[in-house]
Length: 490
Image 1 (cartoon, one colour):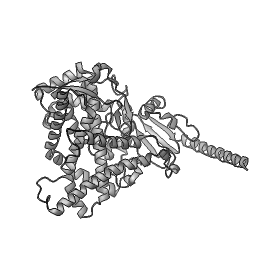
Image 2 (cartoon, rainbow, N blue to C red; image 1 turned 180 degrees about the vertical axis):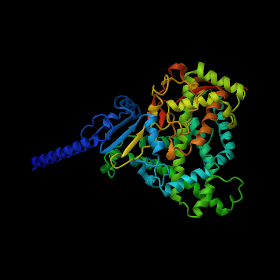
Image 3 (cartoon, one colour; image 1 turned 60 degrees about the vertical axis):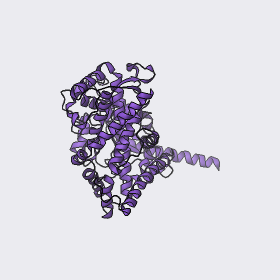
């Protein structure tokens, strides 16, 4: 009997592999070129630990539009701005639907997330809320004092580290600043103590865990029949992290509702985002589930991408201390004065600082694949590898070298118009928080450069600074940037 079952299993497996191979042959006839898939697993083995690098290398062999088979999922990888223009601009609507990783199904986040919802009435409603109450030019102009205060706190924190002779974890300090900026914009209060980073570190660990789990190769995505099993436990772990954030934001909403019952916040002169959302709750335009998941989207995306961009920019600047850092300090000294905090009004006059931000975004895009898109039933996943755009020698001279001056006389920007530099995406699904990020990153980087002199921890020579990354939905620095700061006296 045992021999019978083994034989039967072998026959079924062989027949399944035959059908799979036949389907693959049919698909190959109408798909772009790509590496030959293995039976059953397809090209999963080609991804490696750093998929953005592995797929960039494969694109050199198979071209800028490449097909892979990830388990049962047919995947197209785009590695050139020309091809991306077709997807993100010319046929933006046709390519606007998101593929929803199984990790994002944790706590039903995909049902209420403006990031992952398909384009439709619910998505338009949530997107309109973000564009009307958070990221309009008038709203951002009105809240510029919050960003100034948070950068002053960042400088104060680094000053205290300097007095104690302690190295600064620049990524963590930038994360705490971004976290408290967002929490003041949303709730008019700090989530983390600006001078004690335990809460910020815990929040950062939670956010990074979501990014890492969501970006990790997941068998439940490649073989949808496995979703109910969750073989790697990715969805279970992501549920824990989502619940932490949702509990926090739900508590913020409850606290504000209690204050309103007591009449303590009705006459506030300052109206924050939560006040605006509570008005929409009363008119049933949204519900509590939407508000909690909207805050989750905003804080997960807004903190990690901002802080990692600041950390990468500072790492590149400190690595070239004799050239880039010296030139940046000279510009800051000339335009705003030595040792002063950078204001938003100064950014337009600090052209080299703007070049530093662009060059960092070119080499280290915060979301290396953007977010995956779903195209048709035949092509179920599309990845746009913007990481490879920034390192393409056909587009950039000396692409692996950090040279901010390449943007000095260039009109290329990061707002989605120039496809060779789209770290925040393009089209209708580009990051809605881009206007805020492009105000916050320059004043943080500029203030850290202008207010302090820097020396890498452990007497590491500038040219020896490790620049390896670790992969998630976002691209973080593998080894945190730690440096000793000396306050510059104006």
